[in-house]
Length: 85
Image 1 (cartoon, rainbow, N blue to C red):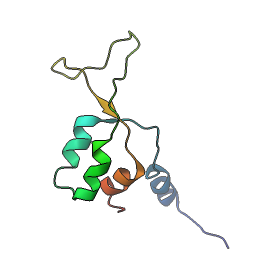
Image 2 (spheres, rainbow, N blue to C red):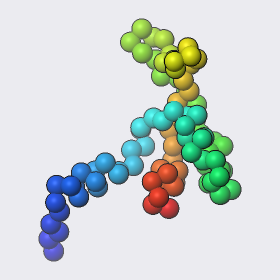
Image 3 (spheres, rainbow, N blue to C red):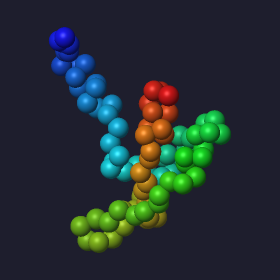
Image 4 (spheres, one colour):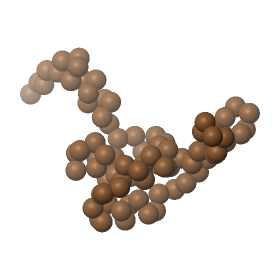
């Protein structure tokens, strides 16, 4: 069985793939979860929090000079954000 995909369809499939090593800004993740059902929040409570350092070994900072906290999300949250849930 052959499946023929257009270039646009292939780009969509590749770009919508869950990457477990991708990092997200923790504050944005939590903001996107406002209004989420309770069973989604149980995944959000255990998210790791860490800083990413630049080439000078300093944590990345926002425009106000505050350190940016990053996180990784499980596939369940990725699917919730992208409407695949």
